[in-house]
Image 1: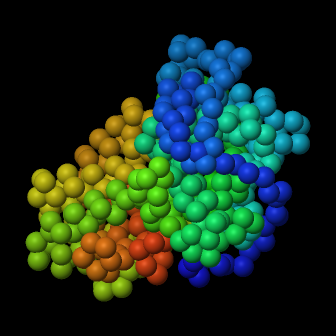
Image 2: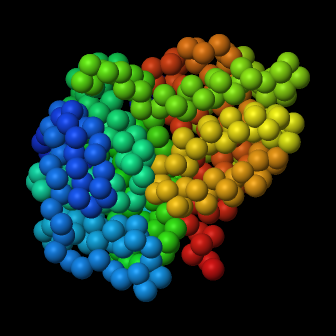
Length: 369
């Protein structure tokens, strides 16, 4: 575990109860997904009794599903749990997300290990409703990597700090079609923030990470951030010598600059500019970006990718570390509306990443309209 993961901070310890996710297909009635989890099958979700908001309320079908899922989750909680889970939209606690172990940094919301099985299922339905199929699977894969860490596989672990129990869900603002609200879900190596503003699902700022970087499930290798790694090495390998000279900042991997706790800060664009890339190389760059952007539902992800593609000529790609696949390397994508960082922590088996939109973190640009 990196020095960053050992930062001394205070955490209220919750009770340990097992959130166990088995390798099986979990058919979520809410979102029509079939996704692998580990350790205990997620059962088909029960259809919430509440009626979904109507389309003429200026909400998409996805927004309506998200609102319904969030209300069903909140309705499943007792008064004490609800007070923890539901926070004001403008609460200053919103920025209290982190990638550190929960014993180092307190999290907002209710702890998964303190919920009943039905409540945990309802909580995961909320996460599924504000992410795409691929995005939700990435969340599950990150959580299950942390479960491996809790068992002492891939690093020094322990049930008190790591594992599926130690993830928290908070909702900021009253879930509604017209008014903005936000889902915050996270624990070690995950800080998911999705702000829902009518038909829009804003992913930024969000941290994804993993330790170990790969593990076995059902006889197959799972790499929660495999695409983020492989596509970036493919791009750096496709650059010619002049482009590499512009892109490579140094021989040693850097660390996150705009990670948790860095809200409102900016970073100077560095590296090779998108306008200096060929059309094929620009497509590779966008493919890298898509690993993060495509975590939200399809229509919104497509709109975001179109926005980023329109400015690809003004988007920079920077690199530090080895350019040989299989070795640790840091990279950064900096554009007018997106900043992405990928940072290994001392090796290739422990990864931190972050995605931000300097002008629209927490949906601020949409909310001002």
